[in-house]
Image 1: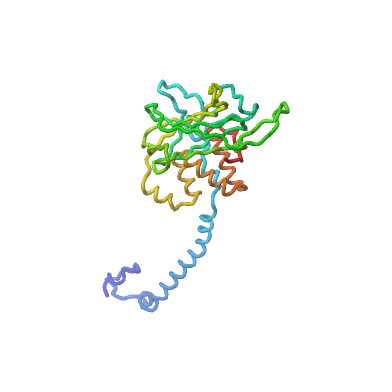
Image 2: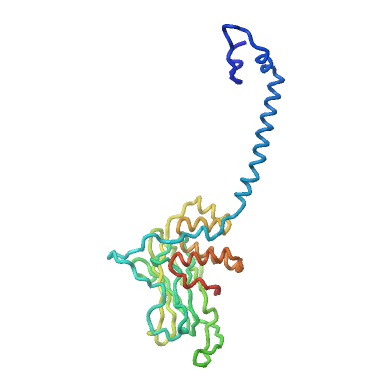
Length: 301
């Protein structure tokens, strides 16, 4: 017999003695090799069987949605062209606010503290909050980097309900307020007015006017936000088309894609309004952009 023949079991051939012990001869028997192989296979199988359920159980336990939300959405405050910290124009400014109930939470755009939120969509969905109001309606305006108005539209509140104000007078409150209102930018396939796809790398400003009196716009209340479209990896896009809302939320928050993060959480809130995990994630998102005073929001238009 050669040394090569016994190499697989780590036995070296003794050239000096040229005799093998009884134990060595027994180990070389084919039948014994089979027995050893079977025993080793069983031992490995049992070991995996004992450890596998623990691993599967750990993977099957979903982590809370709120753990996906960062404590602070933006690490460094955004600055303008003069390197000054940008003023917060998210909340309602301008006008006397005569058509909004006093002492209420002001209107605001749901955007990061810098005012700029990222999107991967050609036509993203935008969100804002409107307090209880008896305004005539609202006006939405989208402007590109050249300060050109590329889209604008007015929406009149069609339905009102009656409520008494602090003086005991009856006023007509617009249905849907207070609450969150959303607008998905209309694409080229929709009816006019049309909006071209948002360009990658470009910043767009948008604002909303709450129109108290259509004949006297001096009392309008306006809120402001901005959009920046970022590149989208085709592999990520393919993954997200089949992903669950929780998986999409994990991706968007990791990449700090603001508008899709809000949209996904809103989707979950509509589907699971009594889910505390979803509510906690929503509240944490608002706190991450210094909008913690709006964590009470539970009404949607």
